Structures are given as structure tokens and as C-alpha cells.
Image (cartoon, rainbow, N blue to C red; front, top):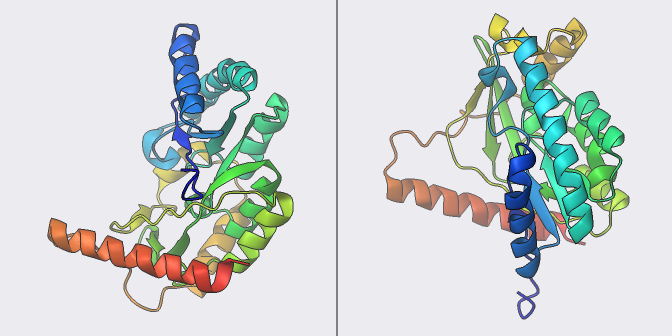
Length: 261
């Protein structure tokens, strides 16, 4: 790693309860021994609007997440390892900032995914600006969208092919933290369906003003991708790998040409 000017970041699961703290600390220690100074984690691996059927279910998740974070924070602080929690289609801005400020830890911050919060109807650049002061590391990606009967479709696309202002995003992140790490996350898959016009989507999001849905749908229509969103269904495994390799190469070229100062 040192010879090639690289770095290592780990991925870790938060402790579920007191009995899981020893496992968490062992994972922290081994990650530190391997040279990691930042570990990425999530409070939930799925998507809020798919997993939960009610606001009560989401509240139980939020309570469990807070418990896990309060168990994890002293261990991260003890080992001086930064724990970066991803905005993983679970927390909206006010919710995530709420527990970050409540926890108020030098060693718990954000793994900022530049595309995930589009699925929660949030304006992506506002998300970056809100989380930038807390960001330890990133999942840098570009996004493409198109309207659907029940909401919209959301796809990761090669950097520069989507509607995100990546130069603005990177400048915002670097202003807040000049040493922030920009990690490419180019997921090659079928588009994700965001059914924001169906009742179940709103089971945990009922307090969002109607204007935010209107703004989001206006944004989707304004930035409709000029071609059909990419699909991998029907491709052979070898073809999928080729498409993914091509996408990554396009991303690296765009970053080299436009994002590296």
C-alpha cells in the first residue's frame, strides 16, 4: 500500500447489543492493524421504503441504530478509528444530522454516497452540502433518472453521464475537508425502482411536505436521461463484466480529466 501510494478502508458491522461489543472491538483492532484509519458502516443494508411497513417499524430501527452507535462510538474513540456511516437510503438529512449532532463525536461521521438520497426525494447537492462537514470518506457516483408509472427509475452511470454536478460536489467536499477520500462506486445493474407515487413508499415518510415530492418529480423530468437507462438483464456473465470494466474505465478517465486538481 505504501509503495503504491494507496490506502485501505474497512467495512464493519455495528454492534447489535452489549454481547456484540467484543466482536466489534476485535474487528476494529484487526482493521487498524491492517492500516485502516477509516471504517465504513451502515445502519441498514436495505432501502427504507422497501423494508418497513409502518412508522412504528422505522422508529424501532432508529432506536436500535442509536443503541448500536452509542456502543460503537467509545470503541472507535478508544482506537482512534474513524467510523463513517453511509447515507444508505435510510436516513434523510434532518434525521442523520440529528443523531450525528447528538452523538457529537470526533470519530463518528459520514460515508457520503452522492446518489443514494435521490431515492428519498432529496436534492443531491443539498445532501452533499449538509453532510460535507461530517464526511470522512465517500462513494462518488453519478446518477441518471427517468420517470415511471409509480415514481421514477434511478441508475448509476459512468461519471459525467448523469445529472449530478460532480465538479461542484467535489469542490464542496474538499472545501470542508481537503483530505477527504473520493472512492468510486460504479454499480453496474438494472435501474432501481423508486415507487414514490405508491402508498407503501410513504409508510415512514408521511411528514414530508407535498412540495418536496413535487420538487423531486420536477427534478426527475428536468433531468430525464436522454436514452434508455442501462440494463444488464439478459447479458451473459462475461458481458456484464465487460460492461462493468468499461464503465469503470470511463469513470476513471472523467475523474482524471475533470476532477483531479
